[in-house]
Length: 373
Image (cartoon, rainbow, N blue to C red; front, top):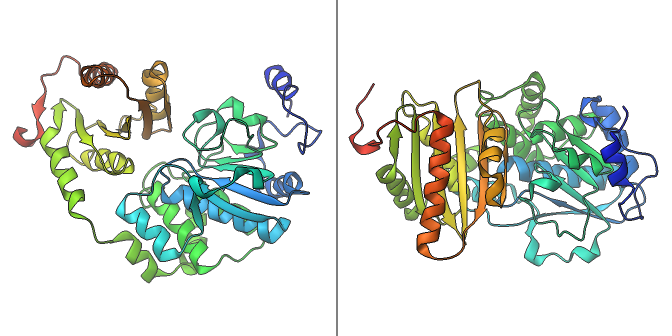
């Protein structure tokens, strides 16, 4: 497929080094898994050590895919590979996911980037900026099931923009194409990654997701899966949910809640997901503060709206990063200045979303006093 002139001109500015001389396919995502695998191994050839990074505050889909890609590079390309992440792993299920499966993931604070000559991003893309790859390094490998960002095509290997409900599905496809039998831990990780991101195949699921899910099911450990899905929860989890319910406001078909200060940013998404269960809701927005950043999570039932596109349009001029796809999306915005300035930013964000939801004229009703429909 021809590469657009914009991408050609930008590739010409990339630093020389290990990049292949021929331009990568502009739409690698459309090729069969066997062709993708061949391209991946071609790009990896000649490198010594690979570092695969998840998005910051990673979820199971991101970690499962990253660990699987590292395993694939070690087994098929002979490259020593490690997995790193930025932010924190805070949600109880995610902590259990890493602990129970003994996943070899390290925080970026423990990683010396200069020791690696091949870099990959999984479940995120270079321009999204919700990852911890320093600006002085370039992503060689990009694997993501979210909508394509054009700049991602600058990577020598960019499997982005395909029709998948989870990045774990893409890695399961790679393993199958490579005829690699996954370990119980990797199979369980990928299975749970698909299960969590597609909500048990009930959200934005493709036939490939279903096929991968069924391929992985007999290979995963159901007892380990149970330990991940039903972990013990700290008291502060229930305190946070108490705050989310107390602060929640219903605007017609939308519900919005302020979690104030959260102990883990991924809990913002968990609350947004849970609030969507309120009958009659088409929109759910949760937001909370963590380490001088405002985290937002959006859920949408209206099929006419794309959550990822909407959150980018509403937040792009506020800095930070944002992204997502059809029914779910998130953003991370910088918070600075006085308490009054921070409150003003929150009010502005909520106002934008209310307008976009078409409920700005609705009188807000506290969830605690809302009536059943």
